[in-house]
Image (cartoon, rainbow, N blue to C red):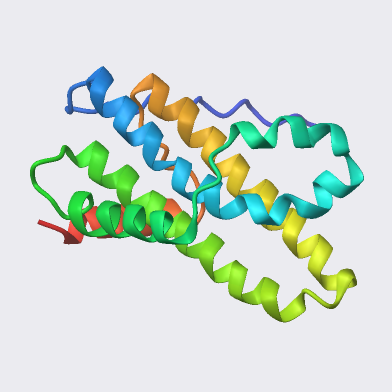
Length: 166
C-alpha cells in the first residue's frame, strides 16, 4: 500500500490585536464562573458515585439564582455589546452568554426528566462534563491571551455576535 504524503501543518494564526492585558484576562476568567455555577447542580450523580469529588466541587462558586441572573444580564448587556471593551473581551462575554444559555436551558430539561434516572443521569453527566470541558479549555486560552474559538456552535455564535455588534 502506498502512503500518502504528509499534509503540511496549518499556518499559525496571526492576529493584529495586541495581547490582552492581565486585568482583561482576569475579568474574562471571572466571566466563565457563571456557567460553572449553573452547571454545578448537574454534578449530583457524579458526586453520588464518587463522593471524594464532593471535596473539590465546593471550591467552585455556588451562587444563588438572583446573583447569576444579575451577572448574566451584566455580561450580556453591559459587556458583550460595549465598545469600551476590546473585541477579545466581547467575544469571550458572548461565548459565556451562549454557554450559560445552554446550561440554563438544560436546567429546564432536567426538571422534566428528573423522575427518569435512565435519562436524567446521563443527561446531567453530559451537561456537567461538557460545560466544565468548555470552561477549562476557555480558561487555558484566556490565560494565554488567545481566543477560545474552537468550541463548536458556541464559538460560532460568539463570532457572529461580535461581528454584528457595535
